[in-house]
Structure formats: structure tokens, C-alpha cells
Image (tube, rainbow, N blue to C red; front, side):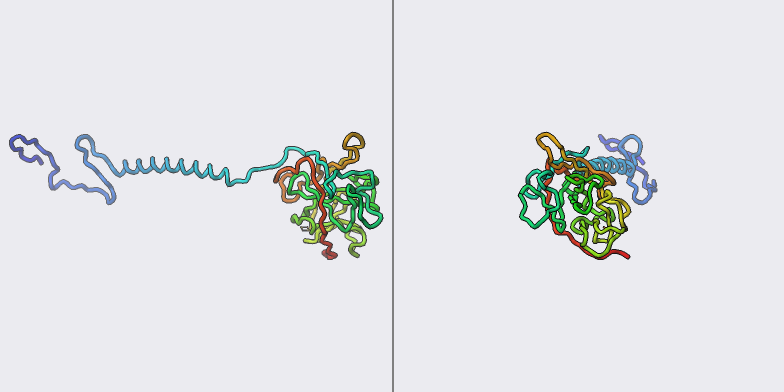
Length: 276
Ligand code: FES
């Protein structure tokens, strides 16, 4: 409909009164001053999508940025280090002057001697700070055992974390002869985990004597140079066997112990109760 123009006025076109804007509920439609009709619903949707995309990208970046701080870093070593063991007094653990030999009598002993009292656990960490190991002297009961060092090849070291469900020392401990009347696997001395009863043979690379564990304890490779400035000192240089329980890889899961690792004493939990 065209309104009549007065003097100096311009014609103004407006829709006829009977023109129906038959629009769906929720749809916004603006009539342009000139040009085609614009669908504001679509336009707003596109604007919203664009804004959401920008916000989403920003939020995604923020989440990714935050996650790099939430995820624990994988720490560990790339190879087995050579680590000098220290005795309970912090001095190099040395073989040759009676050290690491089962004491023949009651102490006190010279400070640089690790007098292996078999009622005590000797624990050192290697290769990582959360991987404890036993240092065991099987003398005089056994000699020249696999991996054994010392005057009679009786000194061995194994992971002090049970390969069943991971109970650590002192729940898993060395049982010297006479500790209990039972003889699992026919052995009078063994490593026994009091959590569920697994036993291991320290004279045979910690092979399983009884379950529920089904694999041996990892064994620490010990080395004693015979000459040079470190002659007769005891080094840990590697580990044999399965990964330490709870670790995908014995070399990953914590930081390394460094160049030295001190032996510490613990009181074992000796429990003479074995599964039938
Ligand atoms: S954790 Fe040692 S026997 Fe189960």
C-alpha cells in the first residue's frame, strides 16, 4: 500500500494490512530496508556457533594446558647405574676384612663392617628411590649361590617387594634356619611374605618355593672390584628377572638413588604361618 504524499513528503511503502507474516514460533525475520529478506534466526545461529567455536578452542587449550600439570611426569633412568653401597655407618661397604660375613659372636663390630645379624633386615634402595632390596648373607648355611659375592659367594640381594601383590619389607623378610618349624619347599631357610604366604629360595635366585606368587623376586646384580681404588667395595650394577612389582619397568617410576645407596636396618616381621 502506498500512502499518499503530501507536499515535500516522499512515498512510503508499507505492507498492506492484510499481508500475513506467517512465521514459525521462535523465528526472527527482519525486513531489510532494501535488498532481500534476512533470516535472523540463521544469522544468530551462525554467530552463536562462531562464538562457541572460539570459546571451545580457548577452553580446550586451557584444559590441555592444565592437564600437562595434572599428569605425573614419567621419571626414571635409561640404564642401570653403578651404585656404591654404603654400610650402616655411611662408609663404603667393603669385603675382605671380615665384613659381610656372618658374625661369629656378639657385637660390637668395627664401624666399617656390616655384621650380618640374621635377625635383622638389611635394606638398600636400587636403582630407584622407591625400590627397596634385601642384602642377605646366607653363610654359613649356603655358599657359591647364583649371583653370590663375598668370601664364600653367599651374599645376595633381591627386591624386597613381594611379586604377588607387592607387600614390601619388613612384611616380606629373610627367615634364617630355625626361625620357624615349617620347611616350605623342603627348605630350612627362605624368604617369606607374611601377607599371603609366598616363599622364595634365596639360594636359587629367589625362585618360588610356594605361592601364591608365581615368579621369582628380581635379583640385584652385585659386583666387587678386585683391584683399583674401589677394590673390595660392593656395587649394585643391575637387576635380573621380572620388573619390580608395581613397576611396568624396573627403571621407571621414580628418580634414581644417585651414586651411592646406604644400607639401613629394619626389624623383620617373622610370622610362622603358612598356607596349607
Ligand atoms: S603380597 Fe606377598 S604373598 Fe601376597
